[in-house]
Image: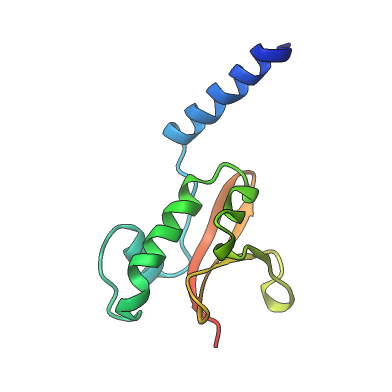
Length: 116
């Protein structure tokens, strides 16, 4: 059992190992989100959101905890309701969102959604 500073160092080591060895996005629900994540252009999504979408997808991929996505505040991390219960979203802009499920530190069924 670790205590004090040793515990903190152990936790940091674990997080660094997890960051370098474990891909956080485990699955995509739509091919367009996966294309953008892989730095390919999407013909189906507006050009003006693709660079921001890539940045946000990379944030999700790097997140160790769901709370990591609260920063920057413009992400507006939300727990969704209704037919999207069990999902979360962050904003690309006022119209577009990235929706995903979060389980045990990983993102699943990641998709880019037009909310309007």
